[in-house]
Length: 331
Ligand SMILES: [Zn+2]
Image (cartoon, rainbow, N blue to C red; front, side, top):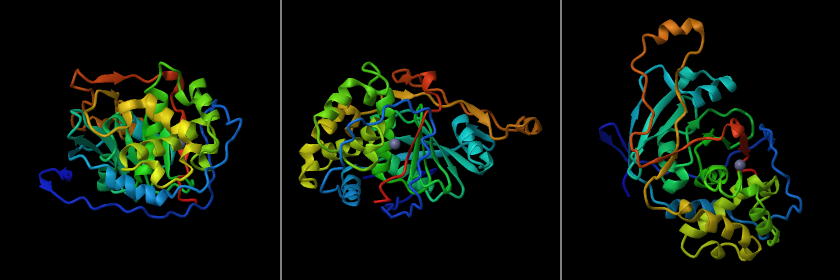
């Protein structure tokens, strides 16, 4: 296993640990116009309940970290997605560090934005993101880390593929958030989101349970929770049956996730499609800062240079659609 390198110095990436997080109120602000149907039949949570901490450990041990290098943006420029998220949450864009992370399995870097007070360090961001299968990463546009926003959430996904975390990300959290991207963008030939199609609904109806309480929120969240199971079952030796005796009660859901997504959820390979980066804007947005922005260095070019990579263009009708995740910490 190789470690990311930071500029020219090579360093060990400490293993972030799964740690508990107190969630005062699992208050969900499902911001977007959630036109997604509620789960009509609302299957119960599987019993015995899944051991999410064990799953986190197993996932971490089974998904190897891709080596990477990273470099920092010049002062004053930021992806619009990061600036909009910052200003929308009362944060200053100037408090964000923007950096390109180049993993060994994709010629195009991922652009990440980290607020200086986030509990997720740059190493946490790079190290956990870099364990995820490349085709799951490919449906992520910008990856952000912010300080705690006192909103009771562990993670947030926003169309077309921006992921925000407040704390050191867990593998299972990223598997959940990345599954939203797959749901909305990887299977568009069947419907968007896939979890809103009859295919998903019919398979759901053949099961007698869902993976977690949060799965019961709606089909979109069920798909994302199932995504954790789907990935686990593929990458951890022995699969989900080794830790969940009632696995057959959720089988149709995770088998559908695995079957339709195919190698999108398997480690290995290299990137073949990516969500195009958000446009680059000055950190400052007011007329007053325009003159100052004139003094900035050249604007970073975030277009993809490798023509073999298909650019996934977002559908404007979903712009800003947001799903939040309280995480499993509340269990
Ligand atoms: Zn979610």
